[in-house]
Amino acid sequence: MHTKNLQYGCGLSAPKDWINYDASPMIILQKIPIVGKKIQKIRKVKFPDNVKYGNIVKGFPKYINSCNAIFCSHVLEHLSYEEFKIAIRNSFQLLKDNGIFRIVIPDLERLCKNYLLDENNPDRSINFMKNSGLGVEKRRKFIDKVKGVFGNSQHLWLWDYKSIEKKLKETGFKNIRLCEYNDSEIKDFESVENIDRFKGSIAIEAKK
Image 1: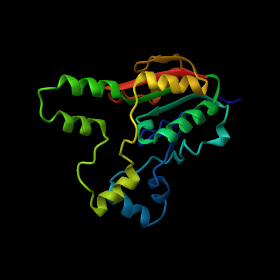
Image 2: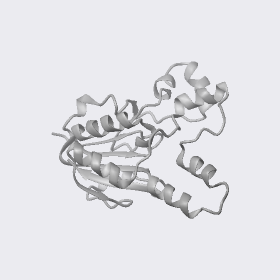
Image 3: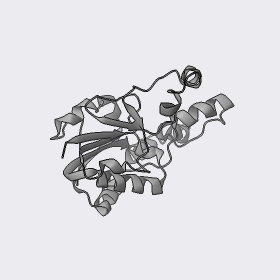
Image 4: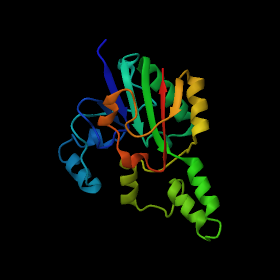
């Protein structure tokens, strides 16, 4: 079977040697004449032409058991707890035996430690909520709500390493480890990884 590399929640990072998916409705809307141009003025971005519309929670059935590598960076924190479990299960199903799954996600433990160490700062709770992406600083105007629909920037559930490790094990993953930028045995990951996305985050690798 032909080797496939799949990335979901890719945003604007879409290497040509990867199958790239993102769940933003903008991918569909930007292809509609007039409507697409108006929305692009609001968002001020355009997804690369090789980005496909798709949601890991709904899955990608045509790629089941066919992927050598799967990557997602700063995606899973935007899912609810139940959606996270479905996403992990779907990722497992997409991989071939011994295929590798790499995750980059904000580190809840680090955020909590920083909060506790900042005990003399009266704004530490405010900083925690801002840095965690969990807080709502102000109610959004209509135009901001439109942007939010296309951006999906709100964090819904944060994780630490032990909790993700447990969920990965329950799903069937093995050889779970903390990883670092560009340290995978599969060199294709170098095309999708961005060192800035690893800072202050947990990076995890697991095998099927």
